[in-house]
Amino acid sequence: MKVSSSTLDQQILYANVMNDVYPDEQGRFGPFGGRYIPETLVPALNRLEAGVKRYLHDPDFQAEYMAELHDWIGRPTALTYARTLSKRWGCEVWLKREDLAHTGAHKINNSIGQVLLARKLGAKRVIAETGAGQHGVASAAACARVGLPCTVYMGAVDMERQAPNVGRMKLLGATVTPVTSGDKTLRAAVDEALRDWVTDPNGTYYCLGSAIGPHPYPYLVREFQSIIGREAREQMLAKAGGLPDIAIACVGGGSNAIGLFHPFVKDAQVQLLGIEAGGTGTGLGQNAASLAYGKPGVLQGCYSMLLQDANGQIHETHSVSAGLDYPGVGPEHALLQAAGRVSYAGVEDDDALNALEECCASEGILPAVESSHALAGARRWARQNPGKKILIGLSGRGDKDMPTLQRTILLGKI
Image (cartoon, rainbow, N blue to C red; front, side, top):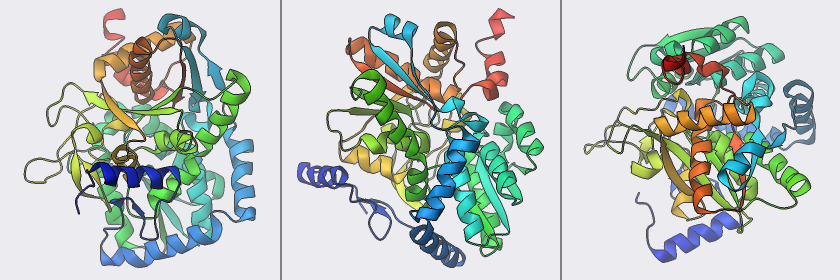
């Protein structure tokens, strides 16, 4: 399947996006998405799809879900006016504070929703993958809350650079299984979780952490994470006196960004900008910017934009951020780019770390390295667009990143 590229095709995709007619019945986001899975997983995904249709928007399920968001996670999260950054950048800067959510990031919005759904579907255990460790922590916490055993697959490289989160998962009762195959990061962890799921598709529920994978996961994750954008939209109207000129979020697999963007998509006057991991350069293997440098292909259950070599082999990636270090992106982001509704750009490691340091010193907030990519992208945009209102998705807090920060920012200060 080829990606539509003509002006007419883009106009059709844009119209579909603005009318919110995606995904379709086959789980397609325009030319992207779908379901590419082994035959053994077909019944499990059919059961999951049926469960999503039955429970997701059921009033009783939504009431239970919203109660957990409010009473356990602490939603709504704050919208913070960044006074010093606003002065420095010459714009009105607002931060949507997912770092203040229980467990420290946006991941918990999706994890508790899926674990509640897993219980409805009669699952006996939950498995999850994690990169930066935040989805693993969120899944472990959600399973403890609901009373289901949890196993988290995590790449050996990520376990080393995100050691605090490994300890948190274990304290929350999860079994953390290191993955030593492949690139030993997020992609390898997803592969291992899928292998586990194949062995027991009936009793095991796979709590996928990002807006990737086979249908209905990209849709399901987007629906749970859209609470971010819905809250932010209401808060901007109430506190900032109007919608932002632009909303900016970091993009790895894309759950935090799609959660912020989706409620703003129909607001044509609001620009949307996703920031990918630019790593150390533009060459293959130097970054994790799938939308900037990728080509269409199939990875881990869906058709989307992927980083691959001339032979179509998925290539290893690089980012200082474990949570953005993934060679693909969710199919909805691929559609939004193809339709021209969302722009995407890269931020290199050094710029992200510099933005993290600036946010700490200016606002008293330690953002995650992932979120710092969005901050750096917003700062760059502000220089070219003075006086505008900027909404930044601060996807998580940076406590988990202290081992990385000790080796980078703090190395010369100790």
